[in-house]
Length: 288
Length: 130
Image 1 (tube, rainbow over the protein chains, first blue to last red):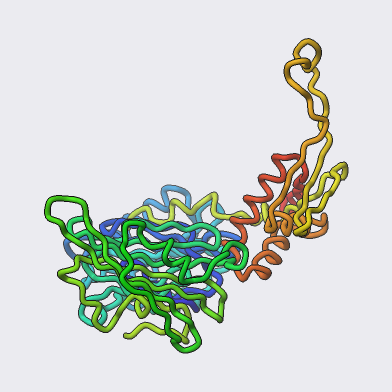
Image 2 (cartoon, chains in turn yellow, blue):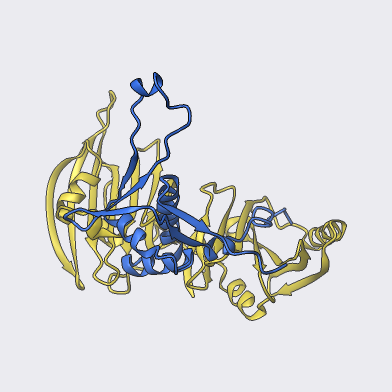
């Protein structure tokens, strides 16, 4: 099973289920996971003021499914999860809902079963769903697309670009100017024609004035680091402090990189500088 | 409950695409560059409308060449007429340490390009579920 953490919701899924669709919206959104042949699971969330009336919701849903001609519609229950199953258009689905008070949101999981319903797997996945706690007093953890990382808790996911062998997630707070980027790139020998340190210099924001570079060995990983600062245009003459790191993980051969930019006045990386915010493997774990 | 799951219903499977078999254009001629990259040349048919005086202005090239980069050349070599799309993806994923879907997106992108250039065709198996 592989851990996924998205929007503070953690769940464990079979290792060959990959996220093919996602939403950045905190209030309402969905992620869809697929095995090699078809979609298998949808995770959706919706912020709500309070706990919904599940009994009524399920009744309404069962009635609607029957109206649509669904066969075998029946209620299900697993711990705090309220659910139902039904066969519609030859596709067996089971769906479960649960309210997460710590996040004030309703979470739903919809499983698609190409063959028979695997109750054991279903229960394993449902039992793994939980709210991911805050870490070190100021970080949120995300685990997706082969990256496991910590972002400052007040930043929002602004962009997520997923391409073959390349993923980059950007978190930010436009008001303060803070930006945190986390990236993972594969097929490195096919395109990398410079050193990791040179690549890192090109990857960080072009407007950054480099104030220091170094490299250190961290449990078999050679981590190149870069410090710098950037002037923010405007009359306030604000500046951002930048801290970035990049390395190639010897286990999977991928290039991992992270770049943190925060207002110089607030800058205090504390226990988690750039190189410690992103984990590639058990050799370079997060400080949590 | 919301209508969660509706997005996935119906179009949720690409199994049929994976069982298709990429087949090389038998008329294609292969060239190889120094770096081992492949150039595939196919002969084109002269369009019926390309007659003088139009052909005096619009030159007709008898051959179309597709120069493939290193990764494209690898995909081309994997398309041996025996492997299915799934087999090509598996080999590609294993060669470049990618996940199945990372490889799927990359491989299908290359296949699409090769098909558009006329150097590959796709053989889709007859639906045996009927």
